[in-house]
Length: 140
Image (cartoon, rainbow, N blue to C red; front, side, top):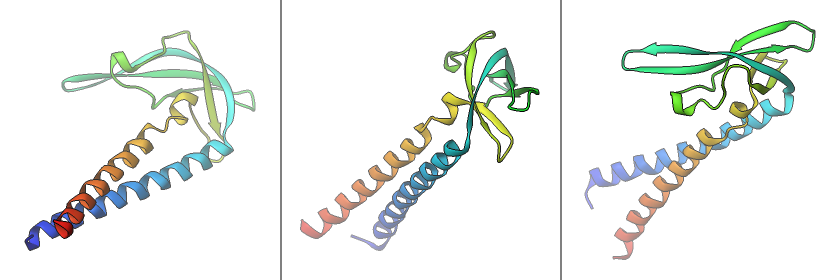
């Protein structure tokens, strides 16, 4: 095996380790954030449209009463294309309030671990693939 093959495989192996490390860091961070949030009830006021060239993204605008009694409106980061938005105006939703950062977000979005699991799976695939190639070189 030539020098460049080793370099490429090493980059993939390090990339896999970086993905796994990122997913572990993300999991720990997400658990820390979830441990300090307070559950609230909110209502979807409307669905906002954000247009960019070639696509339209939809984001729920949610109204919630905070612990001090103030009515707050926030645009959730839990949006996407038309088929991805699961709420409509008037729906009651669960909201998590982070008093440390004074931030509100839909509970469904905050509890989602899909990003973390994607990085974990990608890291495992990179490491398994490069390990198989490395072992194949030594034992064949």
